[in-house]
Image (cartoon, rainbow, N blue to C red; front, side):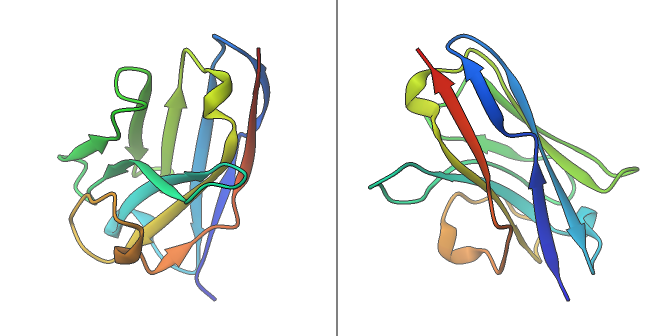
Length: 124
């Protein structure tokens, strides 16, 4: 069964940092483009960052640009989202998703595989 698993969420104070990890089960994640999405209570799920399978292309939503960094370690078959200068408005469930192309897109409809999410809570 093809699955994605996120980890690294938690509670952090405003201005703090967290690093999320995304790993795959049942397939090789390094062959897939990966996106990070988040969903706050009462809001739509939004794409915040993505990376192509080659790692050559990345993209960020304006709300996180300059604060979040996406990267991948093919030796560990893991994609990371480094989140710095966190704000209370970053509080959400964070999901990683994968698609079987060497592209980087922030449209949720393009992604076939999804993790179950990890909670990030930023206190003021």
